[in-house]
Amino acid sequence: KDVLPYLAVDSIHFCTFGNSKPFRIRVRNILNDNYTNFYIKKADASRIYGLELEDILTQNRVNFLLYKDTLIEEHILGIPGDVFIKKHLEQCTNHEKNQIAKEFVKFNERCMVGLLGDMRSYNYVIIPTHDFDQVVYRIRPIDFDQQCYEGNLKIYLPQYFKENTKMVELVKERLKPSSIEQYRKEVRSVITKRVLSSNTRFNELMASLKKDEIADPKSVEELKTALLKLTYNTQFKKCQTMGEILETGINVMTKNYQRKL
Image (cartoon, rainbow, N blue to C red; front, side, top):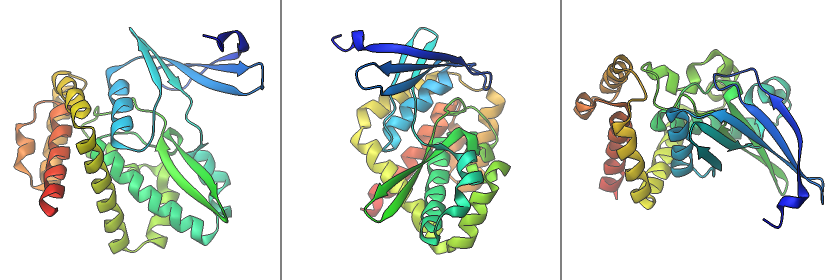
């Protein structure tokens, strides 16, 4: 409340892209000239579930407000993936390219496990962090409207989008199959630990997601059939909603992790 007199709306931009047609509002602190961007969007169930799951399953904190059918999202800092691939990737050192390849493998796996779809290069950001004598890179999503929505399994794997071709080539060039598998296991281990440590919150979210019809029955049937073929796990046969598919996949992963312990 004490800060409000020092905040001013600098500009409001209408974004024509995307299905939510968001407004981007820049709020400036007149005391130090720092500013923050916020996005005002039409709320939809997939996007809300996506934001919540990102907060639970990953280290990425997501701040947002929901009021009726209006969603306010805090801007996520980083270089848009398409811009990074076009303007910065080639200038990276060999060590940095190795690290980016590793991060893309992990990002690909997180999307698959969490059923976050449509991660084309413009829907995620690359975050460089300077640490002593090196730059550490991370990848995180910025658009969550395709959470548990599509029936096509490939939609949940960023590697299949042509916009990510250079990232896929980087992985093939820099990483051995054994390393790729190791990074995938690391991601599953981290997600499992986060689910177990946020068990109550995760279960409450799943209870809501399982009852909510955020995708049509054909998409549910298509996705559970694809996952059955991929994993040979017959538990997917019983799933009737996208929430049940997601919960089944994560529960199987969690049980496998606990069994190894």
